[in-house]
Amino acid sequence: MLTDMTSRPGTPVHPSADPSPAAPSATTAAPKRSHDDAPDTAALFTRLAELEEGPERDALRDELVTAWLPMAHRIAGRFRDRGESVEDLRQVAALGLVKAIDRFDPERGAFESYAVPTITGEVKRHFRDRMWALRVPRRVQELRNRVRVARRELTQNPGSPEPSVADLAAHTGLTEEEVNTGLEALESFSTLSLDAELSAGDDGYSLADTLGATDSSFDVVVDRESAKEGLRRLPERERAILYMRFFEDMTQSRIADQLGISQMHVSRLISRSCARIREEALGGRQGGRGAGGRPTA
Image (tube, rainbow, N blue to C red; front, side, top):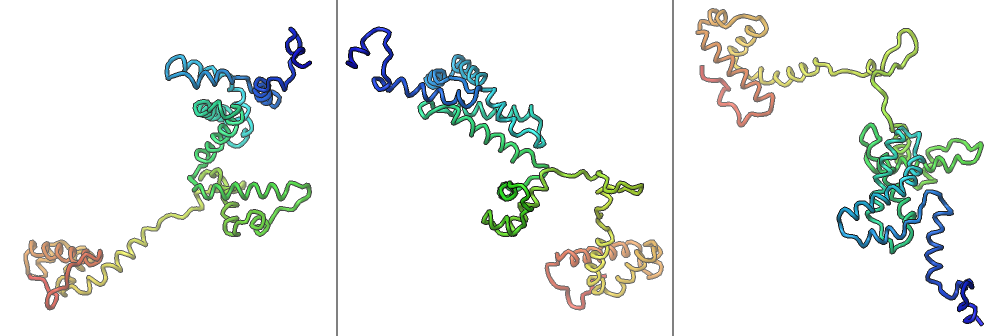
């Protein structure tokens, strides 16, 4: 009876008689029911997989990109209002689409099932790597995402109080220190300009006005303390020469007249004393002084 029905012209064939055509039709129909921007390109992908590199394959690849680009734009639209322009998000999604087309194996199922997570991951990677004003370690970004999701889950019911750090830690399985790190990262997605005004009054000031500056006097204190011990170890005459030259602002010729030595000798003593003090201050002495510590005059 079944044989007679299937053999008559124009008589519909029972699905059980030939299961192979029915399976692909169901597979390709599912994406169409979910989204209007999921075209039937199974044949094109099969042909693409068979072609070698060349102009024909490039043209077919461009055709597939054009066909699936509306879906990529739709996925990019999910991430609008997050600090990035829609046009830039569409470009990132298009890049993810190209990667999905290049890597897709038509024997493993429907293209949409592979393309959606690939494109979504590319857009998320863009936010993770490019949208932070400051470079944040990936671990901190992951903590931020876990804390953000936990806050949303704990406050999804109307009237739910803002969860505490302990609540977030219990919900995520993180330590309270990790939760605090994630909370800080939630507020650090963008930076505040140093020129931003912090007060609305007449005496308003910017953030830059609240930042301290390096005090050069600290360097002077460090230098003096470093040189103090070396000065103490100098012979009395050399200490006197340095005092007259750098504290009383006497010329070398005047120092020479007062000590009864030549100006050239005064110059050599000053240079040698300063070099010795510098070496000691920088910790560059190679050995101890000789007996008495006096240089040859």
